[in-house]
Image 1 (cartoon, rainbow, N blue to C red):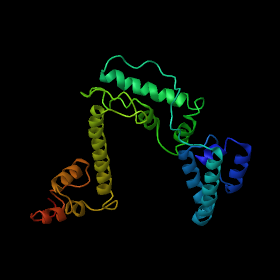
Image 2: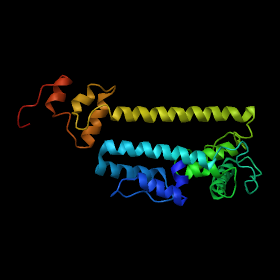
Image 3: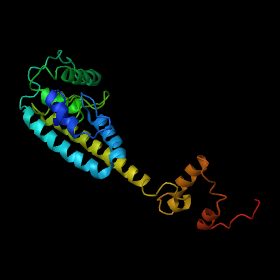
Length: 244
């Protein structure tokens, strides 16, 4: 965020350019995290890891200095004065789901003109931290995760607090979210467990259900478990005679 702020000023742009290696394309303003990462990877190929580490140290110190200089902070009254249309009159899930999207759009549109939103919106835009949905959860409404949810909508955010009745659906929603994160990480870990090119037999021997692996391999034409000699031996079948 400090680097993104610095590049809006000639002094900051000059300081950034002095740190960036000659012959490498520097990221343009407005700076975003994704663009910075792409340009850093390109610089790595040209200058090598040791030079890149030195540059990163300089960029880190510059970012901290300029973030401090900006005076940016998270206002305790974040979102105060936000211009919003009136909320839905009913508790219908689809209405509040749509209204939550309207609030997110308004937050991002009024981020520069509203001093209580300027710092967090800039952090979202440059990719340093958070998202429009996170800001909307602070300001409100938390709404409904699913338009067809049977629960009543949560009409406020964490800034103004939620009632006990609103809190319990939020707990269930959070637990579902954590479960989804855990399942995603578990799938990624499983997919990286074996190096690319590991044999079907090697993967099957460690799988809880090797039958699924065999079926997927056959469907992808990776191999035929019924003719693979190693697989046949492992499941107790003799290898097929040559030519069969």
